[in-house]
Image (cartoon, rainbow, N blue to C red):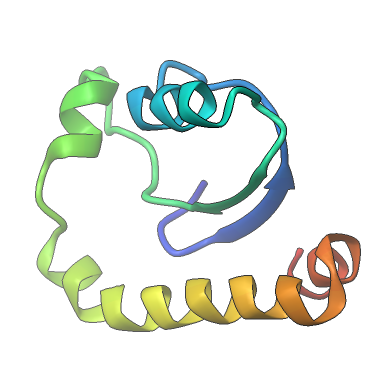
Length: 91
């Protein structure tokens, strides 16, 4: 996902993401609500693992507070109106 893009999703695989693997293991299921927040794609042939672990750029850091607020708002929206209605508003 592009940097700052927010997507809501129910269930799915881990896609090599150790954090999701840990959550799925702890919950005993892969069927839980996910709030996905985009960080963009690695440039060129950069290793994806290196890309996701690198610090945010100065431009991204300036936008990060807003992205976090919008992510929290998305979660609150799901709690108020349910997943499908929230997805329809956000996507």
